[in-house]
Amino acid sequence: MGQRVLREKGWTHAWGIGRHILGSQIFDYWQDPWGDKHEHYCDGDLFTSDIPTGLHAVSCEAMAQWGPAMPRSFTKPKLSPSSLAALIRNLRRSPDLTVSKLLTLAKIFA
Image 1 (cartoon, rainbow, N blue to C red):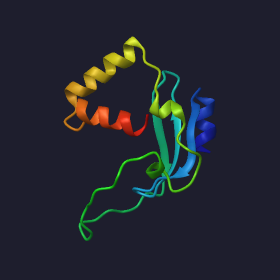
Image 2: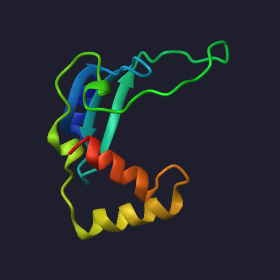
Image 3: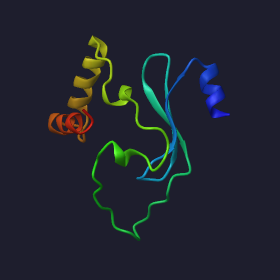
Image 4: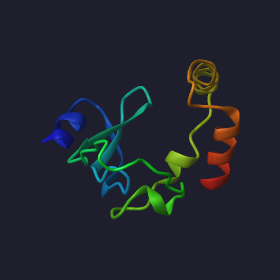
């Protein structure tokens, strides 16, 4: 039903259906008419303080338990003046996104 609504609104299917490893949610990614990707998902794990958090290695293989491989459009986005401006804005605003992290992700998903 969700796919039908998104498709009727002019969205394009981008990746999925699959299940993420972290969080275990069933995912389905869509690209809106303006070029941004969004995750349409359900059935995520419930996290509580009963189990401590940990680290998980990032890799293409670690993105999904099952489903199609991550498409190249996720790791090699089309660069345009507006996407570069958005990247610079996000680097300035986000405490979680740094140039170092961005370069590391670029190496992993190259």
